[in-house]
Image (cartoon, rainbow, N blue to C red; front, side, top):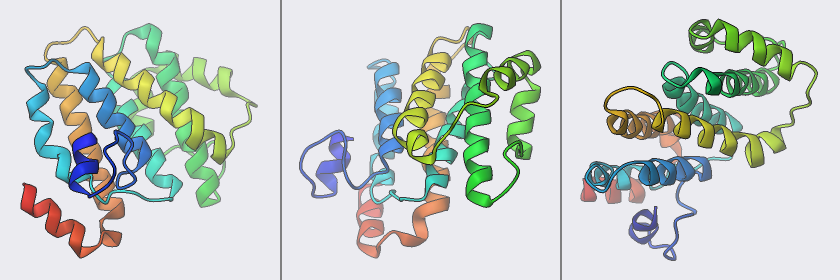
Length: 196
């Protein structure tokens, strides 16, 4: 993220204004959870995060759901309760944004929850009746979801965790580009293509 701030002409920072704060957090978490040997695989992604920022809360939800989607199927059972609760929280925020019933669950989230039915039951009981504001989701809940998902993925008892983490970051960048790119100025696109 520091290199992204430099390339964007910003003050040197790992919290650059040119990148969505939650995407920047995911990049830092992935960077911190891969080895020095694997870290160079992240470098080509740096230009891709420049200009990917938005105030649309759906972007925060998409980033959080992508992280949970990567972690839930492989995380230890003890972590699945938290991750299933995260899915339900994301879906509640989306339902509110779209004016839908709060219990509405997208097809992708339904697939995720079906992989951990016990965790879903626990999460539904735990989160029933808990307040969830859009402000608290952006400021507190979504960052905690990312931390729990990356930690759960990083500590999963599966081979080749580092490629999974790097794929998570790459896939999340792709998601953000699909949601945000129409608003990216041509100068940012030129910078991205120059550094690829």
